[in-house]
Amino acid sequence: MSGSPLRLVIFDVDGTLVDSQADILGAMDLAFAGEGMVTPPRAQVLGVVGLSLDVLMRELVPQADAGTRDRLVQGYKDAYMALRAEQGGVVSSPFYAGARETLEALHAQPGILLGMATGKSRRGLDKLIEAHGLDGMFVTQQVADFHPSKPHPAMLLEALRETGVAPRDAVMVGDTSFDMEMARAAGITGIGVSWGYHDTVRLTAAQHLLERFEALPALLEKIWGGVKV
Image (cartoon, rainbow, N blue to C red; front, side, top):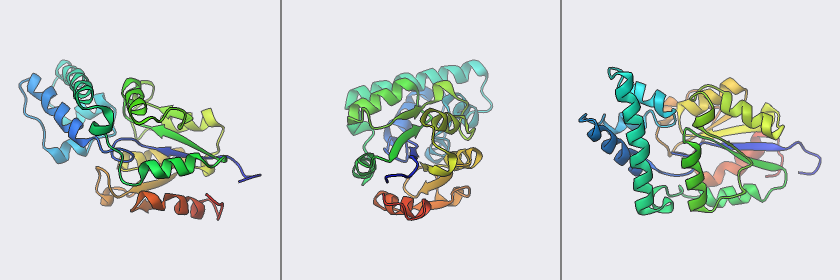
């Protein structure tokens, strides 16, 4: 890619790179049980994954008071960390098929930068990166601690600022409508994936749809006008 501008591929995490639904659902059960409440249905919980936890809880239990929601958020965080510590991050949040191989192939390209934009906390993302041995792979990592919740474009705008990459040279890869709406708001090409927590019919803001992780490099070549990836 000599002479070409730097390109930035930003990934969502849960539901896109790794499948964390067992721990997400388990932690949610423990958090709600701790408040003597019934956990919302599985589809409803997975439907809001990707939002920051405070926003997520408002979506799940709008009738609850702020104090209850705050306790649910903390209960969820504590339970999630405990479940992951019990099993280890590789088991609790396994890569989707083809994810690691595709990341390594893209990372090996000198003109491509990799980033993350996730509803996870800094602590949670650090644990995931450590568990999967991903240190040094993602040059920009945007987490929920420092930004408004998706679909606000703040995470992506900061990723562009940190890397110096223009919006036209960046893509956002994610599984939820929140990811795709965030990409659109930031002026970045949105690539929806079919294997995550939102049905593809919800990904109306996506400009492309990916059925297999291994197909991402060829799609990037198409998006960037034949540039070899």
